[in-house]
Structure formats: C-alpha cells, structure tokens
Length: 616
Image (cartoon, rainbow, N blue to C red; front, side, top):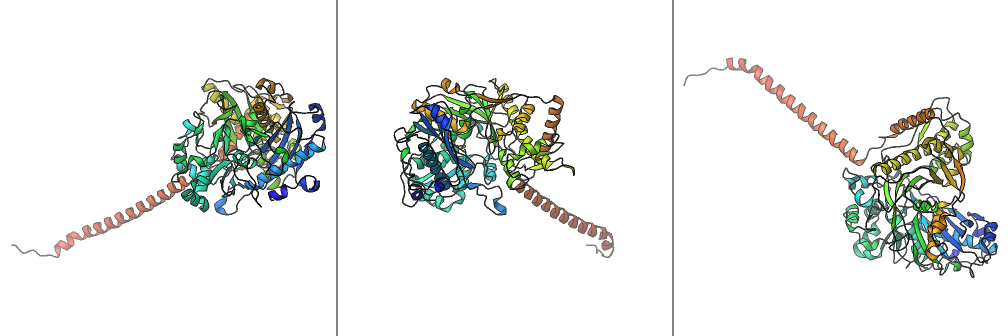
C-alpha cells in the first residue's frame, strides 16, 4: 500500500475501498450529547494484533473508531522457532487508513473537522517491539521484532553472566528477551546494512519502539512513492523508555554504560536513541503527509506504553490502585507513587507515567504474562477446536469444573513471576474421558491462575516494601467479555473484580493524557469523575475448591519447566561430555599402562633366573 494511494480524498475514493478490512463504529448519540462544537480528542492505539484510531468526547465516551489487523510474521525454519515480526510500514499505513475512516465517519455524522478540528491526539502502543530505520531514506533496516519474540534469549543469558538481575538496580528489569535492548543487539549483530551504517554514517541510524516510529512518520515529510516519511520528531516517553534496559529509572535518561554493556562490541551513539519526554505534553503538531488534511496542525500531546495507558485510563492515580489488562498477554500493574519499588518476587519496576516536562514521576510494579488472549487464538487457529473466541465461555460452561485438566500456555516460556525461558506449553491431567470442552476451560482458567500469581507477587512486594497493596482488581481488555473467566479470577484471587463502563481503557488513557496537556480536562480529579463501574464480580468459591485448583495449577507449572536448554546449559553439557571423554581416555590409558607394568613385574623372577652374573 503506498501513501500516494492513501492521499486520494474521501470524495474520490469509494467507501467500499476505504472501509475494506476495517472494523468501524460511530455513536451518533454520544456525538449529540457532546454538543454542537464538541471537544474531541483522538487516540492511536497500536497493539500487537491490530491498530485502532478512536475519538473521545469530553465526557469520556467513544464517538467513533476504526480498527485494522496487521500481518503476524513468523519466519520459518528450525533455527527460527519463536521468532515474531511485524512490518512497520504496514502498521503506519494502517494507522493512516484508520484515521481517514474515522474522519469520514464523523463527517458523515455531521462533524466538520475542518472548522472543529481535534483538540489533540495521543499515542499508546505495544511496548518493547523494536524497529531500526535510516533517517535519510526513512526505510526500516529490518522488520519490527515483536516483544514476545524469543530469538534474543541467548543474548540475554550471555549478557547476564549467570545473574539476570545484574542491571535491575538501575533499570528495574531482569535481563530477558522481552526487552528492547536485547533486540537492538540482535539487529546490530545480524543486519549487514545496519552494521555498515554504524561504521560509516552512525548519525542516520534510528532505533525506536512503535510510538517513536509513528510519531516520526506522523510529523514527517512525504517521500515520493514511499509509505514511510522522513524528518519527523524522534522521541519516546518515559514509560516506553523504561522498557529498553537502557534507561536509568532515577535520572530518566539513557545510560551510556548500559547501552555499551548490552550492545557490545558495537558502539551505539545516543543519537540513535529517541529523546525521552514526559507522557503528557505537546511534542509537535501533526502533518498532512499521510493524506489527512484534517490532521494538519493538530497537537500530538501524549505517548504512553499500552499498559501504563490502561493504568491511566482506569484512573489508578493513587498508590495501591491498579489494573489487569486481558489482551494478547496479561498485564497486571499497580501504582506505587513517587517511589520506585524494586521487586524481590519476579516483577518489573517501571514508570507508570509522568505528566508534563519536569513533572513528578509515578512509578509502578508490573507482572507481564506473555499468553492470555493469544492462547484462545491458538485454540482457534492452530488446534481449530473453536471457530470464534466467543464460543469459549459456552463450551467451558458445559463441564463440571476443569475435572483435573490444566493448560499451561508457556508458548514463549513463562514470564512474571517465574522468568523461565526453558518452560514450554503443556496440557496435563487428561484422560480418555476428557473432551475439547475441558481443554477450552483449562485455557480460560490458566489466565486466571496467572493473574493470581502476579497479584500475590505484587502484594508480597508491597508488604515487604511497606507500600499500599491491591484490595480489588480493575480489569479491561477483550478477555473481560468472558464472564466465566472473570468470575473464576475473582474466585481464585478472592477479591472483587471490577469492569468499567468504558472498556477501551488503553485508548482512553492516551486520550486523557493528551487532553490534559491541552486543557480539555483540567485535573486528574475531573478525569476520575468520568470513570464508572459497569459490573462487579464477587468471590464465591469455597476455600476447599480454591485450594484444590491452585494446587493442581502449581503442579502443572512444574511439569512445564526444563523443556528447552539454554546455550549455557548446552555448553555446560558439551563440556561435561568432553571432560567425561577425557577421563575415560585417561582411565583407559592408565589401565593399559598398569596392565603392562603388572605383566612385566609378574615375569621378573623368571627373567632373573635366565641371566647369569659374572663377578667383577
């Protein structure tokens, strides 16, 4: 898809073409309630499976939205198992397309975006997914390496030198394939053109996560016959920067020592990394280079990583408040206030948000689980035992509990709180009487068990650090549509699970932060007043059943461990084989020599009898 195609005006582009493969929504009632000259704020929600553009009213309701899925690239080959990539140009093109569709919807509904432009636009994005591109050409050097990609596991292990927490005091993170720094190292090790430019013209190299890539293109200048742009702003925010392994959590700046340690032997200049900004301020005005004149001069006024954006959208502004997002993965995050709490229970210390340049930083504890919604996708696409995710609840409800079947979705290893890259997915406890209904139920329950693991870890850290802990669980994301899973989560954690009226908390979080920067909303208290409860799930399971289920889950997790050897383990095993071989050779040689000596010694008396000695 070329930008020249995207530049055709709505008047000349047939709607069937513009709307093809786009999921759309417009709520004229919301628009009517917003008034004749509504204050509207846009939000770009760039996720792992799709990209969305949503427009919110001052009342915090969705006026219109458009969504497009993008290609999931899984390179083939035995040496590429666990690799996961995205095409960054496809994602930018989809972003522009979604914006154009929403503007078309609003204009059809009577909103003139020329005379009443958006007040601001914010960006929220899949974190850690890493892109490298050339600032002179605008071309990516390689596909984006997705956050759950496993190719850098050995890199993380090599840097760790047996201690995955060696940089935790600075970064708040363990060394793992999850984070952007190891992906930068892989790109430097494996992309020839990037290596060439690093040697000859390092100033043209740009590394960024999806927020940086979109901000760069949305504020840049169009190139002829090309999708991506050049010359845009090169920035990220503190929440995304805190996920690289490169940023010092205290100074909120890139740390050259960390960059050098992780990228060695490559010398990466700090000019190759985006400028770190707050989460809510006017960074620049958008351009019309994507063929959307209504975007021109609209302020780009917020950037937040998706989970931090959901925390902000759930109005979790006080220490001890948190949220759990059920998306591709599961992400439970708790506000710890102005204090960075360093975990001793397998969690991540991260930046929650920062409002305005020089504003006070709010930190958070987070537990990240790689597979939640993607486990249901696996049931649909790989096992093909369901046709649609909506079937899961009815299928699971046909069983009398899990009946001993557990699914551990460690497809990319186990993330928080275990951090075991050697784990792999497994289904345990099956007998011939079990059916697909039990497997579906096991997959749903796995998400709840993992939520409990992280919930307990967060509260354990909170108690040990004497900070406020979670007392309830605000939830969001597509998985919350499954009431059976939400009830089971409440039962297993033994707290209330609460769904808000506006479920698009990730998108609205970026909209709130952008609106704050330009005065659509005046304060956090005003935003908090817009949050409302849609449904509450209360725990009702007996302690006996809760204990039985939890014991079975922990046993299943144990079965998932140790399936993949690390390179260090392989080297250790090879060294042991070599030592054993040398010992065997040495033992054999000693035995042969001993046999020879014994044979000679045993013949010595007879030999002496055959000799005569003459006196001297």
